Image 1 (spheres, rainbow, N blue to C red):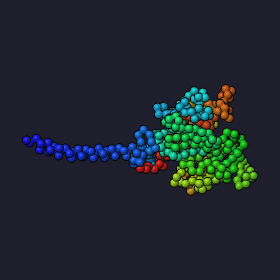
Image 2 (spheres, rainbow, N blue to C red; image 1 turned 90 degrees about the vertical axis):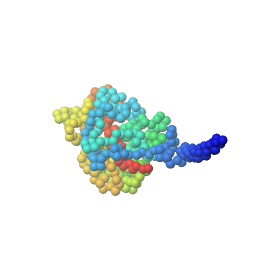
Image 3 (cartoon, rainbow, N blue to C red; image 1 turned 135 degrees about the vertical axis):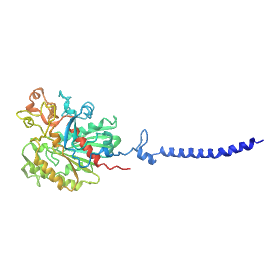
Image 4 (cartoon, rainbow, N blue to C red; image 1 turned 90 degrees about the horizontal axis):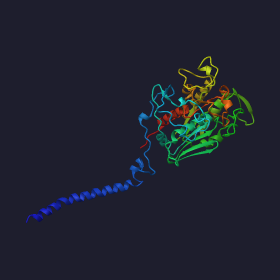
Length: 415
């Protein structure tokens, strides 16, 4: 007789539990439906699993930055054949013959296995994904001569291997080269301007250092291609130093005069600084200036009594060294102009650390006038060795690691 009341009591007890379960399941379903939508704030931050337009923004941690006050340009080269090179010639299809020393017959590869170690801090390990995230929706442009082109190629090689085929492209649009990472809407670019200001040597392929004529107060033609670029990296040195005097104009395009190179360089850099002040938005754009890339033309400077050059050198210089190929007057001019500039320009002083690297040049394993050296030319390294340009992988990778470190320093984390 007591069965029915007992059953009713059980139903009354279970009903609230069932109702709560239905409410929980319904809420969970709404949450999951919201998560499947691109409007979900969670997806806006973390991205859609398996694809989608939203991705977690890059977040730079304290360990990613070098300590404030640390001079990353003072230090030493450390042998590291475990972590280096960061890429290989074979893995990067964008290298020109001027830099592929192994492919061109260089017998040693020691120059690829050195890591730059600052004395008072550590450079962050290069992370191509993090760099691409920093450059998302942005343009990074290298501007200068063929040495700067080598740095551009180095940077492309350092990131391109992590981008799937079909998601990257490379275009030559003289005087530019443009590498694009499609999924990041990011580009790494190069612009040929050996003097930064305009000159008769501005054609990307048809140019010669023998006939130099520089328009010291003209830069607008180049500047049109630099406007709005998010990260600009300038360099200009070697082309100025061919002879102590240079033909140039200032004011009237018809008034050609002979200038002392240092005087002309100062006028050109002042024209460039004026362009920056008129065209750069320091809140949105970053500007870097690379110091001069050293040459190693005379072995007696690091090995007294010898009469050779950088050919057959396999190890860095150990100890204090400054070659005569690096002009201190030019260094001072750059310093003076940047101090007076109203635009914040980060000076990447890579000269001293590069001075040690007599082993890193292309020597006879590069090209001259677009062609590899002949057997006869290679047999005369004293005359034909290239002690200006660098093999890749090699020294310019370290320049880019430093540039990367500064981009991390300047990156503002956002939620």
